[in-house]
Length: 269
Image (tube, rainbow, N blue to C red; front, side, top):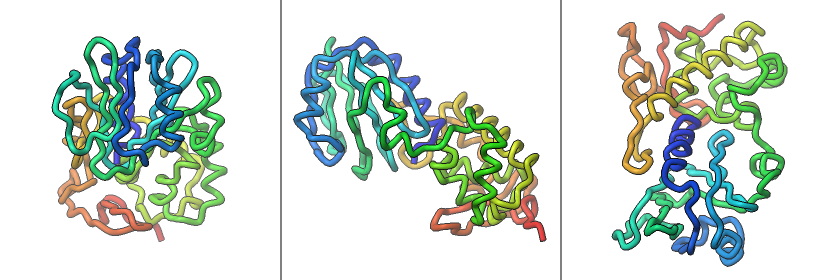
């Protein structure tokens, strides 16, 4: 699933292609992608011009003159810039026909992605964005500390809870725990204030590095044919050995594949 760095890469890349482009038409080939009434979605956006692309956690917000819609890529959603007349892929589900002979195509092998109209100015206070916690770049570590004190769950599970802190997914949760020498089974409510501050700092550091590298390409993430490069810097996720040569162990924590080093990330007793 694309996480914060991958979605930020999509946002930055698309800005170079679609800002100030007008939507001449929208072709919806798989209606379930659209959470709104299909006809309302098309008529609301038709003849509007892309003015800005925002991001909140893993959500993209496409802002036009006076309307906006959010997009969640879910597991394998992608955006591609194409020329009118280019052959459609069987996984192209929403086609934004733009002026100047361009198309913005939403492609999704598993069809899990969703789009929804939102208020142009107040989208952060509307569902689904209103239920999200702050991003690591925004959160106050003391606020996070108070949230974690109420969570008697594995820190790996809590890092994936978007209502506590948004933007971190499975890949980066594994990498954050490794860099902190933190066992992923550690209960969130035992972390000290200093460790929580370290958690925020490490999360920001890793996410920023990943953004600079264009994200992590695993399975099918790409934006307009551009793949992320951060996968070459992964320390534990999908690795066989950690940087110190210890064997990586893979376990399931709350049904999510978790990679960690039992030596570097020893459980505290």
